[in-house]
Each structure stands twice: as C-alpha cells, then as structure tokens.
Image 1 (cartoon, rainbow, N blue to C red):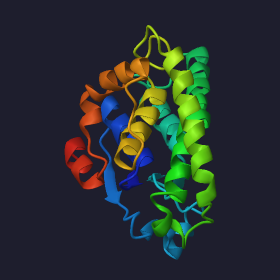
Image 2: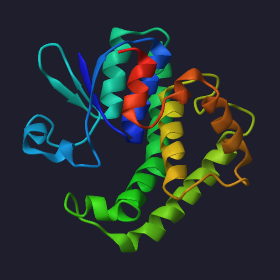
Image 3: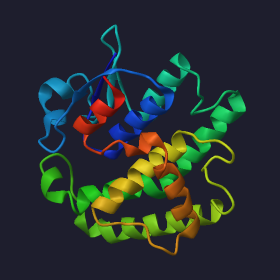
Image 4: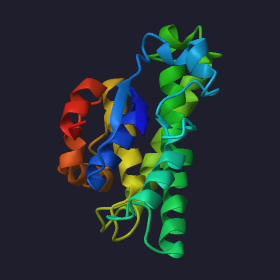
Length: 216
C-alpha cells in the first residue's frame, strides 16, 4: 500500500493513526501548496483532488480520511481506534461526525476562504464574506465540546479514538493560521494537552518530517 499525503491536518491525522497502531506504509509527499493534488493525473484517480489517499496493492485509490481509518482498522484491529464492538464503532463515528460538523468543517472552510484564499482561488469558489460566520460556528462548537469534555480526557468517554486524532490535528493546524485555542476553554485545553503528550502527536504537520518519524 502507498499513502499519498501532504502538509494538511487530515493527512497528519492518518499519519498519527498509523503511528498509534504501529503500521508502516510507503508514503508519497504531495505538494498541496503547489497544487499537485489538482493536476489531471491525480484527479483522474481521485476526483475530489484531495489528500490523503491510500493506494491499495491492487491499484485501487481509497480517499477520505474516515474511509482510510475504517479500512486500516479492519486490517489492523489492535489497538482499536474506532472500536472493538459494533456499539463502540458506532459511538466513535457519532463523535467523529460531531467533531466534523461542529468544528473541523467550519475551520477548513474559514481557512480556504480566509488565510488560504489566494492559494485556493484557482481551485474552488472562494467566499470571503463567509469567514466571520464560520469563525462563529467554530466558537460555538468549541464551547459545546468544552462542556462535553468536563471530567474526561477523551472525546469518546473512556477511549482514545480517531475522533481525538481528527480534532487534535485540526486545532493544532488552526493555531498556525490564526485560530489558537483561547484560555477560557479549560476542558478543551486540558484534553488538547493530553493528546499533545502522546508520541504520535509529535509528528510535524509537514510530511517529510513525519515520514522519518514513522520509519517508512
């Protein structure tokens, strides 16, 4: 298998997932800033033009972070980062969807339309007037998660999962492009520090540094 990745939070989340599980894969760094992922030869195999993409041994291209998580979890079930039972897996997906809907989707849209607008103007419709709204949605989502995380250190109660990985990678990226965590989010801050202390969180956002960390 071959993982196409790049200097963005979702590829970093997959690299963290690999390290948490001890999976070693061949990797290829895609120059997202330079638009390599939007070139015709890439889009022909992944119409969404995004990374990460996992190329399977039979040549099939599997895109979308959640789908890659699920595929690899079924191949390498231990340690379980989605779940060991049907209920655990469903609970993790529930919380991962809450992470996406309440925070990460708004964060990425605000980045594309705001700090990244010049870079992305030739790749997608840019709506700069929407940035304040997405920032407000992020604030609301983080306030909601702050209340949910009172008294626990993982998003899914009692289990470290892909929901933690996805949110950590997103918030750590957000801090580099203008949206650092505010001190008032005490429970989110405590959760973030706990995830940051894990070895997998030491992987750089930049993939070249991450590759050496995974010993590919």
